[in-house]
Amino acid sequence: MIARIAYAFREMWASFRRNLTLTIAAILTSAIALLLVGTTLLIQRSFDNLLVQWKGDVALIVFVRSDATPEQIALIDESIRSAPTIIDVEKLQYLDKTQTYEEAKRIFAGDPVTLSLLTPENIPSEFKVVPITQDPALVRSLSEQYRSLPGVEDVALAEDEFEVISTLSRFVRTVTLVMSLVLLFVAVGLIWNTIRTAMFARRREIEVMKLVGATNWFIRIPFMLEGLLQGLIGAVLSCGGLWVLNSAWTSGVAGFKPGTGISSLVVPSGYLSGVMILIVILLIGALAGAIGSAIAASRFLDV
Image 1 (cartoon, rainbow, N blue to C red):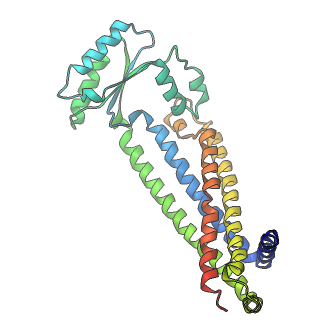
Image 2 (cartoon, one colour):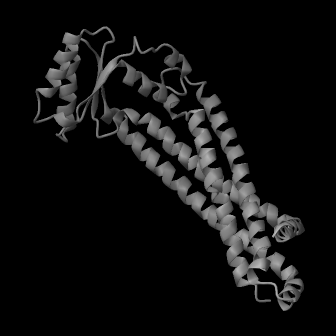
């Protein structure tokens, strides 16, 4: 068994080096495709950061001053609930200071200056309001009423930012996802062509192996390992490229004025590590390589 495994890896490596030009082309195409896949995941997370406050059809947020008394908070809650024909009372959320601070850490991930000024003690708590009405003028009039309540620091409206951001998010994610799928398909085709070329170059050797009793799988496995290795190397390169891309983006965003919404588009490094692990563990690249090589090995084995 060990001898067979050693043979499979030895043949895989020999074939890998024999078609170096095609191999490099397949690896680079896989890396670019997987880089776009990872970028799509990062873009999705970054826009989610920007819109995290507005999930669940939230249309307006009432920010309560950090020094507001329990009586003032109760009054604000009662005022919001007093319009059941306009407000979906069942979906009304109150985030205390701790919860709001956790949310702020995600929103201001790329704005350490602003985040450093916030603490669980001085951050405003907030009411998230989901209206039943679809009339934006009515929602805006509600916001003006809430602004006048004692203890209210500010009221933010989703309509001021949600539509443009969500539309841009869908467009960018769709474009990058389509491009990555197309390039991934091209990578599979290149790996398929590389394995086909390798099998054609060794057609006499394969024929002799079959004549002496070698099974199709014994012949096929080294070629499949070669394709898997090409895809895996592409995946590793894409992870490195993704890390460089996110680092450059984070550094670029740091130059923006603190407090601007663009800072929310920074993806925390912890999530970036998760994306890399996802790509490596699921072996998207290795799977693409294995599929391409398996098709080629099955198609051109009868030589």
